[in-house]
Length: 266
Image 1 (cartoon, helix red, strand yellow):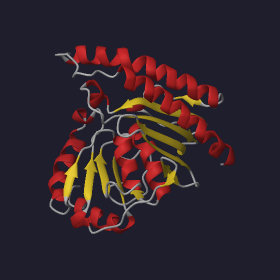
Image 2: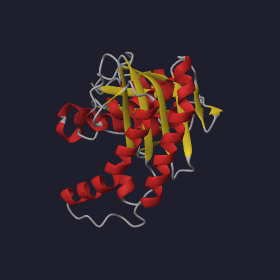
Image 3: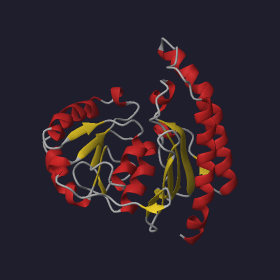
Image 4: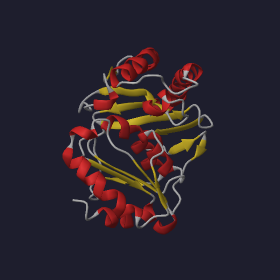
């Protein structure tokens, strides 16, 4: 992994450059779009060029790696090296003029994330980065989860972009919220999926859960959280893979209790 470790600073630079461009063009006011097609057109006008730039920069850094077309519905290839990137993880917040969005880049090798960067340009410019087997950092400092009692932990949650089309995921998500809320200090959805999972690795969140397949959004945060020392599984406690239909990341001392909270969800 030495060559991947050497690649990391250049990926961080690429992600930050795209983040700076998007921050400069981010709407100061909520998007005036009144319909879904209008909102999607507005988003495409901003996200499209940023995505092209990010893919171009990453392609130059690793010319032999392929590019997965759409991180929102990413099917992670089982063989070879591939980039999965998202210039605006948290697109809804971005369009509404809120700061809770992030730029992500993940290098996948033979179906497994080996490098990940998550950068939040307007949340203090925070940058998470990790290489498989090399630990995780937040703004250049070693990241680590914070163990505490579940009763004083803040939990994050999310849902895949196409959750409304998955009745099983909808049912599980609905059942999980009260199950977790009864056991923790607070439950929050803080926007970008990848950023929330990474925040488990840095101790800002105690745990994060989600139901439904969402590999493209979960991969970068999952690598960062795991490399920081968090436990990353599905909601039943099995090792998480991109094909899993649920996700749980938690500080080591919280993971067992979090599994118990989700045990009745089904």
